[in-house]
Length: 150
Image: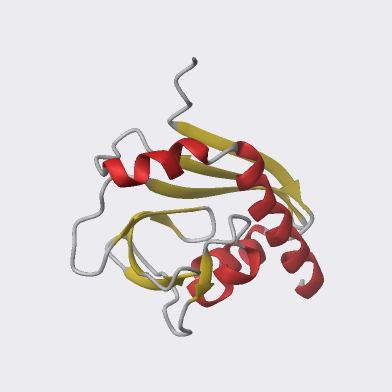
C-alpha cells in the first residue's frame, strides 16, 4: 500500500481579481460558504486576517471550535493557518492559499493541505483522506462566489 501524500495540493485559474479572491479567504466569516470539505459550520464576522500571529475562530459542522493560527501572510497573495483546539498548540497540519494574478481579472490559485508535521494520531485518518479533489471542490465554490460578486 502506498503511503499517502502528506502535502496535498490543487491549482486552478479563477476569473476574478486576486484582491477579490483573497478577501473571501482572509475573512473567516465567508469561509463556510466555500468550504468544499463540508467541515465548517460558521465563523463570526469581524475576524479579517491582517498578519502572521492573528488567530481566527471557526465552528465545525460537528460543533467543535477551532482556533486557527495564522503562520504565513502576504496581503493579496498568501495566507496559511494551523488549526488548533481552543487554548491548545496546533497539532501540526496547515492550510495554505497562494494567489498569483495572471491579469486584473484572472488569478491562478493554489490550495494546499500540508500534514507533514502532524503529531495528533487522532487526526491522521482524516488527514490521509484529504484529497486534491476535496481541495478543488473548495476552489470551485470559491470561484463561483468570487465571480458572482466580482
